[in-house]
Amino acid sequence: MTHLDGIVQLLFAGGIDSILIGGIAAAAHGSPRVTQDVDIVYCRSADNLERIAATLAPVHPYLRGAPPGLPFRLDAATLISGLNFTLTTDLGPLDLLGEVAGGGRYDDLKTHSIEAEVFGVKCRVLDLETLITTKRAAGRPKDFEAIAELELLR
Amino acid sequence: MSANSIDDVIEVYKRDVDLTLIAECLRRTVPERMQALQNALTAIEELRVQVAKAKAQPVDAS
Image (cartoon, rainbow over the protein chains, first blue to last red):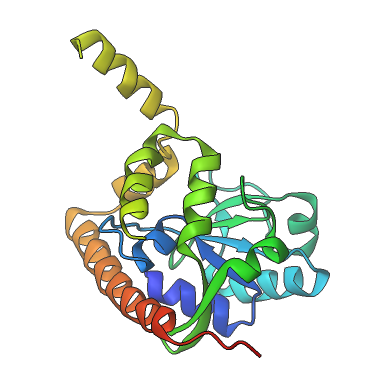
């Protein structure tokens, strides 16, 4: 079952330095599209990787789409050796992105985010202009309609 | 647009479809899918309201 609120609470109450991006950020800015996964860009600092591993462990993160039973463990070493992870968790799908096309990394995007208190926690959401920039940079046809909507939300 | 060109466009769109998300949905029962949708709508509405409030606050110039 997807619990967007639960994932957001978990991430930000856990002190993970991250920014909501993608469909959930688009919805936050007023897009009528419904998303059932959470996409974040996360800080790659060693401390933050440790926090991500510790915070997500209770919701059993696992590689989405991978066959069950693989010896996958989302720890700091795994996070260091990879960059972007598409995960399933007990609270629903979660995509961890170390870098975003057209936007860069967490440190590049932090100044282009809005801080808001949602679900009882302070979270960061990518601002509308940067969200449009990243979706344009991704160049995926499936995003074209979403980009049009976001541009009309300016 | 001819039928063929529509087919071509749809094929291009298919390249970016996240099949793992579809698989996640298919693992649920229909009532679970409806509940997940309701959960998402409720959460998104709260997120939207709070982000709109944050955007409406004056920017601290200090």
